[in-house]
Image (tube, rainbow, N blue to C red; front, side, top):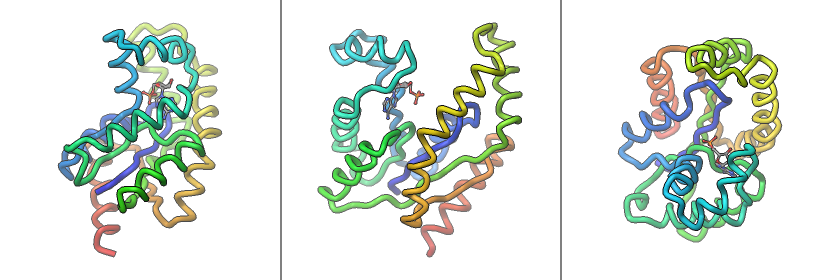
Amino acid sequence: MRLLIMGPPGVGKGTQARGIAAHYEVPAISTGDIFRANVRNQTPLGQKVAAIMAEGGYVPDEITDAIVRDRLGEDDAAAGWLLDGYPRTLGQVEALDGVLAESGTALDAVISLVADEDVLVERLLKRAEIEGRADDNADTIRNRMAVYNQATDPLLAIYRDRGLLVEVDGIGTIEEVGGRITAALDQVAAS
Ligand code: AMP
């Protein structure tokens, strides 16, 4: 299985990514996690991207694309993978297309977790309260949603056109949503 997973802030994308990857026995590869680990370990890459990440900006495509290309070339990714947080730009879509073409492989599906924005805002507000994050208020959260939609809508359109998009209701328990995703993917695999 070669999969992408996309979903708005608060939908539980990272949790589902790990569960789905475990289910299909492929690595879950999160570009955010890779960057965060490099910042934590103060690697040359980490030093390059720390300021960008602190501001919530995007790491330049040439850096991100190279990281993903290298990671997908590792042994554990030979039989499949699930990418979380990549691609985020049209340039990254093209770069991923290039990596896939070079290795004679293709995406099986793009999972899009869908949820009502008001439900997600409620959820994130509650989390901010519990974690004492005063800078997370309804306005900043809605702004993050808008930024997500603006960045992601064109990518979802591309994968929808290619017939790869699998939209799944993201509201429910971790098990419920995970079950919906695997059921939808099993259908894709059977078709
Ligand atoms: P995430 O955990 O996916 O929200 O990623 C955390 C941060 O890492 C983002 O705010 C970006 O600064 C950076 N990042 C992660 N993935 C990408 C990507 N595909 N393109 C550019 N920057 C990224």
